[in-house]
Image 1: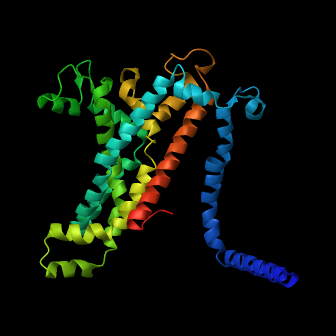
Image 2 (image 1 turned 90 degrees about the vertical axis):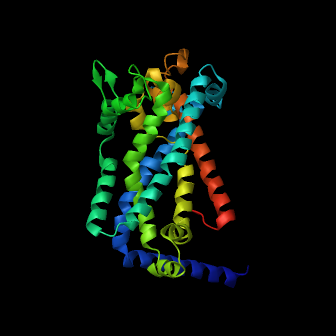
Image 3 (image 1 turned 45 degrees about the vertical axis):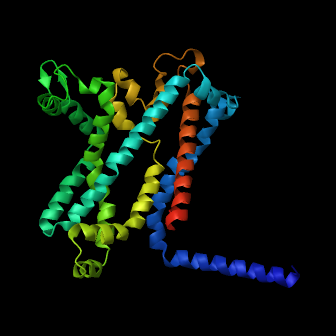
Length: 335
């Protein structure tokens, strides 16, 4: 490229920079509104990424991250193949199973709710029903888990509502304590999760349904379509893009489970099915791994960071994979 070509490129770059600056000045109010979100992501999402180094260090608080001895992939080997690897793989399995159940049973419920809300003709009744369904999502996790424990209790002569109903139906014995039986933890978690999140999660699908032109339904009715036919051939195709994007995002969360809820509900008696990656990382980094890992690994921030990094990498692969498959199959993708 000659001198004049370089000069032209510099002029073009300056022109673009001035254009960007002019746009920012023109819409400065929007950028001010954007500032809190950018600040949040910088402080709590990007800045903490420096802590990833802890996974590759024999971290000591007194020496700091940079001053601690470099350990390479030692903690990853301990995580996957070491003395306490069984607990890690148990937590990995439980996390994955909870999310599989959530994908099969919880993911469709907000869609069904949105379809039901869209069929309610009374605006007052629909608003009341939607508001009631949203409310559990705004209640503190502590209150929610306390309610769950109360309605599933069975001790000292106090029998919770859910426990009593299941006893009357003959599904459990009178001695069964739901929150102390590993076999029931996943069911309790998924059912309560549906109650908490289904209503709030239906907002996105309801908005997508409301965006479908009424003329599409009118044309379907003229052709003799029943209500189910309209849902199948008009509503579902109309919200297919939204469904695909939400499914991709949900797949990206396959190794994420509500940490606070599990922490408040589980106990050593149910670790077999309730211990998940988030609680494993918490116990490993802050309070030991069930007391069975000896030596320096009993409470190891480095091991906990390695587990967290592995979880993040798997989540990234799942998102990229689901997005790629969706783009190839349906031309719909997040990016």
